[in-house]
Image (cartoon, rainbow, N blue to C red; front, side, top):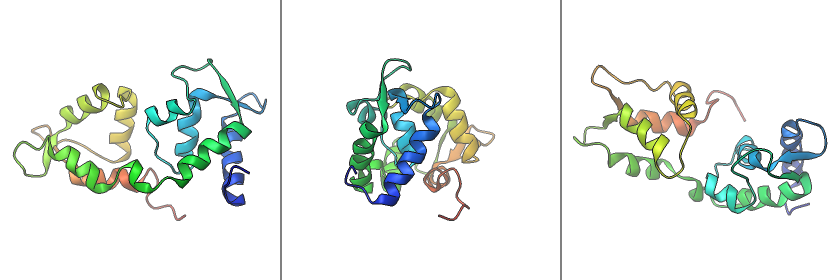
Length: 160
């Protein structure tokens, strides 16, 4: 089914069932990206919207049979498409005005909230909290430490 290994199909169905809040065999298309992220993938909002994710809840629902081909497509993509350590470091170096490995936490927050893949301020706060990112007395933080923590995921000590 959907050209995936059977264990991945089962995993995708389990995640789909979690998001099926009304137990009707349907999930709001707004949650396509969230389901993919729950499966360990990291698509952008734009990539998800190209594949049917809606901008608001309540606009459209999908069935598991519609979700599996979307998951399969992202599952087969090379990891490079999802951003690497080098990609993050290269992007954040643009904000390192003194080339000392530090950047302003306020500037990072502004970039994440206002540019390209805009994040809600509460999501940025959650990311900073989960990566234990805090600024120093001058409002700066080490972005390499942040990137390493970010790429470890929300449960770095959990064995897979």
